[in-house]
Image 1 (tube, one colour):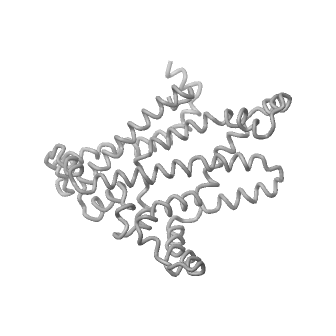
Image 2: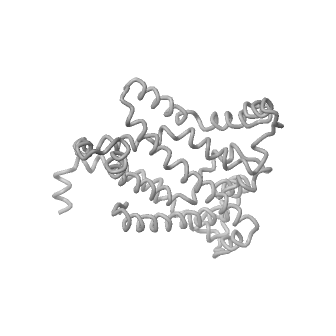
Image 3: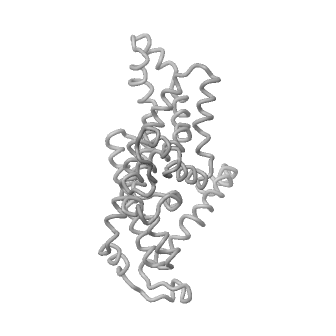
Amino acid sequence: MIAKDWKKHWPLYLMLLPTVLYYLVWGYGPMYGIIIAFKEFTPRKGILGSPWAGFKYFQEFFTGPFAFRLIRNTVMINFWNLVFAFPLPIIFALLLNEVKNTFYKRTVQTITYMPYFVSLVVVCGIIVDFTASDGVLGELTKMLGGTPKNLLSDPKYFRTIYVVSELWQRLGWDSIIFLAALTGINPELYEAAIIDGAGKFKQVIHVTIPGIMPTIAILLILRVGSLMSLGFEKVILLYNPLIYETADVISSYVYRKGIVESNFSFATAVGLFNSVVNFILVILANKISAKMTEVSLW
């Protein structure tokens, strides 16, 4: 059966091959390294030659002073990202879909896409300059009679700065997939809604949103599944020891312990814990979505 299917569709299999190789080499191959989390790993002895440590580093992490803070910060930043950065691109796509002027629509799309293509280092540099005491926000505060301060030196502002900058950078880009989904809605459904007397708002509620609901559900599952993941690059470029209380997340902590301090076993243990939690969240989110919307990843 497989040989017959291969002979018939071998060009498709060849097209699939690079993707399969990519995940085998970069996705599944490195999973062998999770053994380091259970060993007293030293590069000189290698993975197999290093002695076993059992759950020592997991215990060390959970009994340490930073576990709760790291988990809380990671979840809180991702939660606010989910609350604001997930629905706003949907709303933006719905609004943009109603624009009839092609020139204006394309101009707005281009302007909102542009921040996504700016280097993250440049974006973080802009944020640092804007939030400095003598930056744009500091000057505005001074003009309004307030006392300017460096916002990135105060822990209470970090989450807001992170989420707002993330929304600014990704709003247009994240809306692309919803705009693509909107083009797949059958125009006859809108015609039927108009005949039934539905206005624009009711058309959106009863035709547009249900039409893109499968796309929303799939992306929401993936977002929930990454609730414990947060890229360390942006955090490291923005944070400092003064704001570790709200800015230090699991990925930045793993970076410091693994790369800076060369504590490879401890960093791998924390990273493995993070991955397991994300895996569980994906499973739960998928099951809930399957029951509530009949849309799921599998």
